[in-house]
Length: 119
Image (cartoon, rainbow, N blue to C red; front, side, top):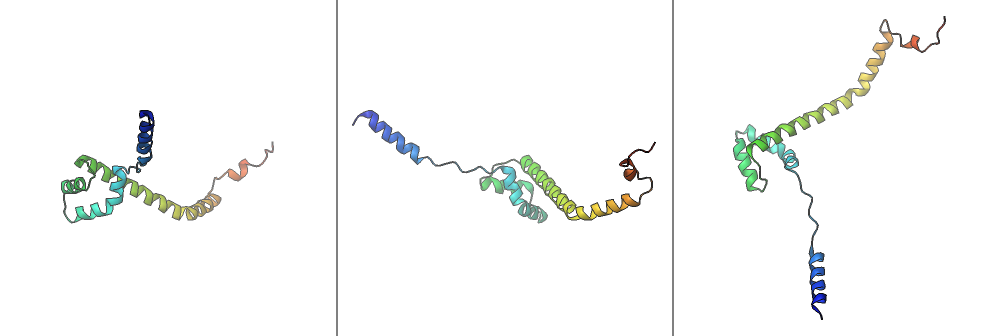
């Protein structure tokens, strides 16, 4: 066998041995997943610097400022999700009330505006 055939075979084996990279999970997604545990630890009196040290030990390298920012954003995202759910839950009821209110409100000219003009 020639050197080219041996090289091709070796290169083909190495290419076939390559595994696809696992999808990288962002730091923010990891913090969102751990948010209940992090908040519980903070309620117990654990300092944020101790939480950062623990996260670094588990392989999630981040600074104290990154942790604080991620917690702030995760809480903000969580509150936004709760507001959206509350709006969805009350939306049909609010729409009915708005319709009833507009029908009985004095000075409502919506019914008149759609009629043809009578000069």
